[in-house]
Image 1 (spheres, one colour):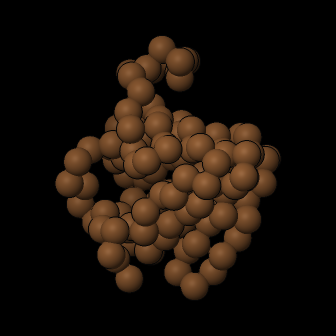
Image 2 (cartoon, rainbow, N blue to C red; image 1 turned 45 degrees about the vertical axis):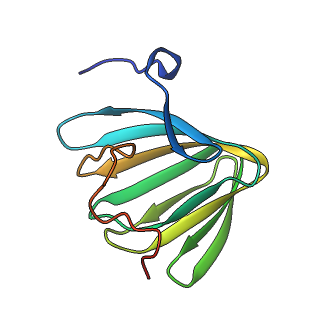
Amino acid sequence: MTGAIRWDDLAVHAAAPGITGSWRSGDQLSAALFRLGPGAVVPRHHHPNEEFGQVLRGSLELHVGDDVSVIQVESGFLIPADLVHFAVAGPDGCVLLECYAPPRDPFASGRSGDDANAR
């Protein structure tokens, strides 16, 4: 698929309690828009994809390996492939744009590399 992405026109998927989103994929990259409620937790996981994220609204406490960062509006992050990470939405929630290379479906069940107990 090519052209403009109208996030409101795409199917909405549940990712975890308090987290919904939509996604689109190309041949080399995929993108997802997530809406996280206040305090929503993105479970600890890892995947073979590099990940870029940009906070569009609210804030996100991001844990990558041993590092913890609070990502505010207009700030982003880059996570190398296979690095364990998790996140917690700030008190006002978070709207987050993420991109993955190579592409991945962040809503597929049984995703390779995703593990709530990953270390």
